[in-house]
Length: 119
Image (cartoon, rainbow, N blue to C red; front, side):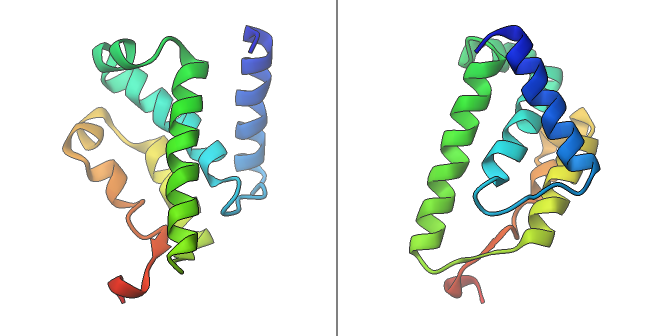
């Protein structure tokens, strides 16, 4: 992806989020990946540089991970919670590096999926 395309994509995601965009089970990986990549780059640059070639590589890998997780959860009969997904993205956007390191930032993402075994 060309740098201008990456910038456009990032700006599109910001606009969608600001306008209460169409976050769904299918778009969740696309929404959360840039946020996770930004936080990782900001709070753990050494790790980020060792794991990803660039921002596009990071976003692609995170999107794939979350898409696969969504597919598995859906197949297992788990239920996607839109409100929890929105809260997850917002919590990650506002997380401090301390919250990131401690894992507190991801706690808000624990309830995005609810599976029968968790009820």
